[in-house]
Figure 1 (cartoon, rainbow, N blue to C red):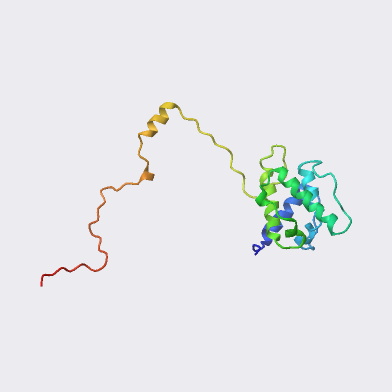
Figure 2 (figure 1 turned 30 degrees about the horizontal axis):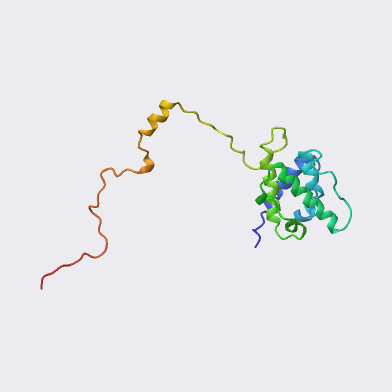
Length: 173
């Protein structure tokens, strides 16, 4: 069962696409219909990676326009979007899982932050940067003698005062 759609995420995705393409997108048309033929998506990927999609079909039947979506998916993978975040063609073409389409656009925006040549708008939180630590041999040896609080501390704890259930009565008869 497809995930519940989020109009706010869809709007953020359209704003981000507009910012990259530099042209407005018709908001009167539903989100899934705007993207269905794959033309806007292909233009987006060509803007991010110039020349990555050589042919964009603007006319023709369903098969030709579905190829646009497949070309977009291939370009998204080249851009660095993980396979599990790229939607399947039917998710958009047959409107089976529009939420996954939205998540894919957000994943493309997230990957854009990793590309130094990208200077377009941001979408979503800033990606974490690598923060490598370098310790001297002396610091590493000192750390081996430290007891981490992750091991816990009993601080003199005992079981006094614990009363669990009914006391056992032992009697002589």
